Length: 123
Picture 1 (cartoon, rainbow, N blue to C red):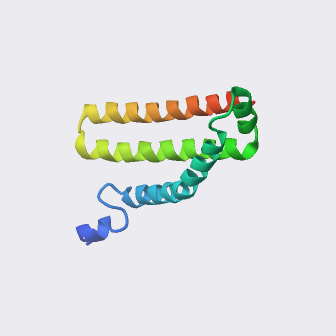
Picture 2 (picture 1 turned 180 degrees about the vertical axis):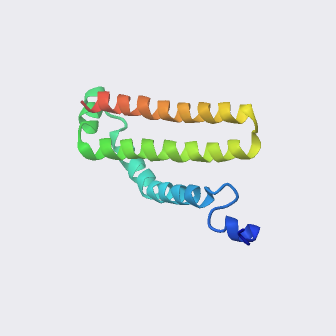
Picture 3 (picture 1 turned 90 degrees about the vertical axis):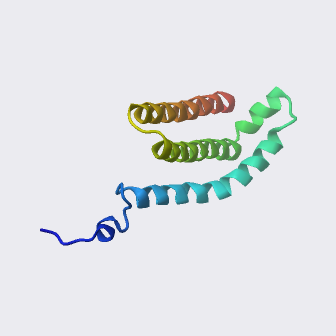
């Protein structure tokens, strides 16, 4: 028999035993976005205002394409995790499971479509 208090059992994990893991995921993606978003704004601004051929040539270079892809992936995954946390807090039962599946499916669809568009633009 284990003589552990409720606090000792939950310490470092949270009640659902995933709080620390989720927190670190959010901290890592937030830190990455602190650097990626300004880089994306500057690279996107440099590509604005050009003709179609100029934009194709600009995004065929590796730096703007990589910054755009990383910002898309990290931003969408960060948004998905935040939406999942909100759904877990406010929606319960079968509706919660369906909403989580919809949020996850939508996020990965946005990533796939965005990366496909970027590859079509870059190649």
